[in-house]
Length: 320
Image (cartoon, rainbow, N blue to C red; front, side):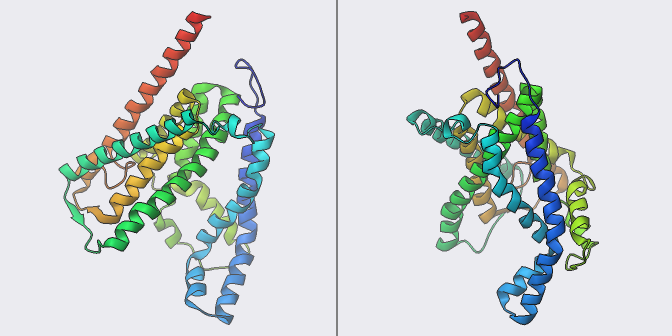
C-alpha cells in the first residue's frame, strides 16, 4: 500500500499521479517531435555524415518514442517521492544477503524456464544456426546481452511493479492491481505494426505529425491485434507481480525478468526458426510471447504463486 495506508483503505492519488505524467509525456512528445525532427533534418543537410543520416532515417515515430521518455524519466523520482517510494526499503531493494539470494534464485529460475521453453521449440521446429557465429558475437551476446537484460529488467520492474502495480493495488486491491497493471504492461510492450507507419510520412516535420504519431501509438496496437501475444505478455506481468507480492522483494521479479530477457537475446543471436505458422503458434518462435507453450507455462507459475500468497495469508490469520 502506498502513502502508509492500511490494507482496508484505498486511494487514487498514486494512480492519478502516474497517469497524469504519462498523458503529459505523450502531449510533450507530440508537440516537440516536429521541431526537433526539423532541426535534425537541417543539421543533416548542413553537416551531413553517416551518423546524422542514420538519425534522420529513424523517422518521427522513433523521435516521438524517445522524446516521450524525457518527462517520464525526469518525473520518476518526483512520483516515487510523492508515493513514499523514494527509498530502497520501500521499493523492496534493501541491500541484504536475503534480497541478493532472492535475486540470484529468481534469475536462475528465469534462465532455466527460458532454456526449457527454447528446448521445446528446438525439438519441434526447424532451427537455423547463424553463420556469423564467432568469438566477438558470442561475447556480445553473453556479456552485452546480460548488461542489457539487467538494465531493462531493473527499469521495467521499477516502473511496472514497484510503482504502477502499487498504484493500482492501493486504488482497487490486490487482484485488480495485478490484473490492470499487467494489462498496461502488455499494452506498452505490444508494438504498433510497421504497416501503419508505412501509410504515414514518418519523415515529415509538419506541425501535426507528432499528434498523428501519438494517436497511432495509442490505438495502433489494436489494429492488427494478436490476442495470444497480448495474453502471454499480460500473464507474464501477472507472474512478475505475484512474485513481487510473495517475496516482498523487487529483486525477485528483476532477477526472473532479466534471466528470461538474457536468454531471449542469446538464443536470437544465434538461432532462428523456419517452420509453418501453425507449429510456431503452438511452441512459439525464439521468444516467449507468441506461442501457447509460453502462455501455459507462465499461467502455471502465476497460479502457483497466487496459491502460495493465499496460503501464507491463511497461516497468518490462524496465528493471529
